[in-house]
Amino acid sequence: MAETVSHSVLIVEDRREIALRLKSAIEKTDELSVCAIADDVDGGLNQLYAHRPRIVLVDLGLPDGSGIEVIKAVSGADWTCEALVVSIFGDEARVIDALRAGARGYVLKSGSLAAIGKDVLSVIEGGSPISPQIARHLLAMVSSGTAGSSEGAPQIDLTNRETEILNAVAKGYKRREIGEKLGISTGTVGNHINNIYQKLNVNSNTEAIARATRMGLL
Image (cartoon, rainbow, N blue to C red):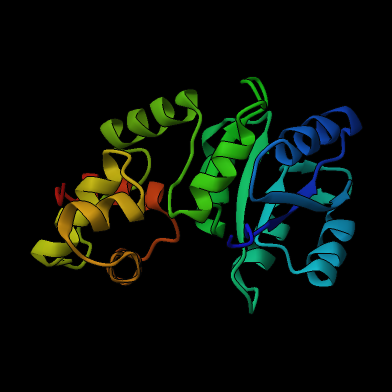
């Protein structure tokens, strides 16, 4: 019987009770384990390089600075590592800053944290979990144009395959599911998504969908 792969998770959260709730939810999820908990930016960065986790759950409002610093460090890591924001803040500026820094998802603390393990696995599988309130906020920003305008921007051409994959991502399909649907490998799907990121100058599925929608590519 094959041994189950365990993905390590670093929690960067200053409120002890929330950190413990996150830890409990993670440890109840198969394939996941908590490698460390930090309560500020400095501790988070130290634990990041000490443990080299697969996923970092990060709050934005930390005692010694912003979790954005941790997200940027995760994005620049020399191993496979991704950040998922877990925050009480859901305002436009913080959401956009987090996504631009490279966050792969954004979950509000006001929602249930019991499913955070599933959210982490979704990120590992190529998804971008996001709280419904944040999703509505992003859609409103796109509709109103407050997330930025494509006027005057260079023309971006996605291939038919890239457009097909981005449409599937927008509908919530994971990379494995897209591969099965299109008859290609998960790795090939990942390569297409990376090309999409480069063309759109974004760092996450959520940003890609928002920008492609603004530009009329979806």
